[in-house]
Length: 231
Image (cartoon, rainbow, N blue to C red; front, side, top):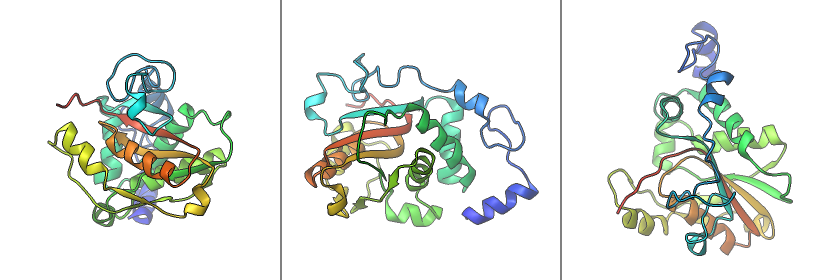
């Protein structure tokens, strides 16, 4: 699918999903317009204002993530269209603007011994799509930033989160992952990358597994945040 999309782009070039400019699935101007200025200044769990780490003091004790930042709000039409294009329409070109967007919100200058790792998609979904979108986005980000890229997690189960409560998501996420390549994890800082976060249960579960395996720090970077105030 990746190579088919690449080949077709020469015959039928992509057009920006927002302004329709030829040659891009999302042009730079439109991408910049959907940047969420509240990223990191709002708690990704409860949506309350917080300091510059994306997690408020009230939620922090229950979090394994040291920080989290997101580029855009999933409610924005362009953001959701990019995610859907990659996940459901086999549009490989969507990985480039998403990786580029995540690069603009990363704060890697103060972090040492970094490994970039994706939050793996359930195997059956990746097989159906032909790729794992988080893998592609994180690999593009790592290449752009000149960082080590390793898949450090194995997905052990899948769970359809659509329509589920926050408690159901939280309980299911505890069984999602096991650590892979533990010798690489010990003492390093991990940047976890995903396409979308909602309640944050999946990201936090992944961070806990990595810290239990010896990671010194775990920071989350996400293309889009979809805040769901679920009971």
